[in-house]
Image 1 (cartoon, rainbow, N blue to C red):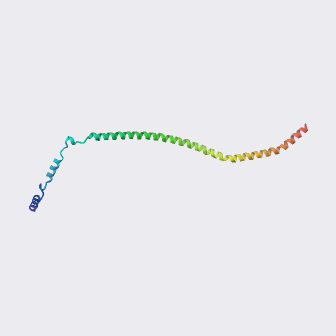
Image 2 (cartoon, rainbow, N blue to C red; image 1 turned 90 degrees about the horizontal axis):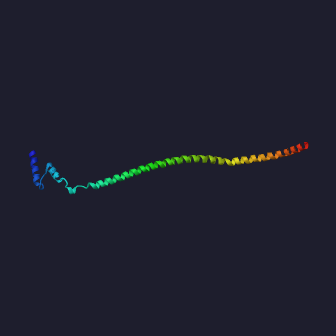
Image 3 (spheres, rainbow, N blue to C red; image 1 turned 30 degrees about the vertical axis):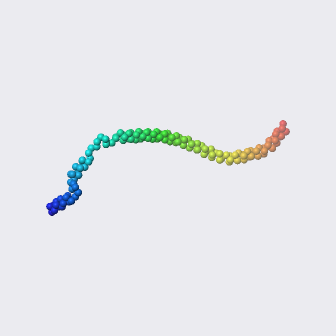
Length: 141
């Protein structure tokens, strides 16, 4: 059985194109030959990548610094807004109280007018008595 297999392999090697069947070790040797080390003219220019990396790092650092500045400015603005909000809440409370007091003014004015009218009517009703008293006092003297 092994003999027939060997005969078939040999017949296939004869029929196949030049070079015949290659073993794995042959292919490995060919691959090593193809992967020769590069010569100096074909070496990549690392300075171009270094320049790009340097530019990227500089840009990132500038953006990071600017982001920190914006964050601190935002915190300052936030504290100012909180202070202004508290200030205007106090003002709003005062204005609401003033509005309530102003809404009570028409009733207060009406009460004052009725009191004034009552005082006038009382004053007129006391006058005749005062005149009679004066006449009585002057007669008695």
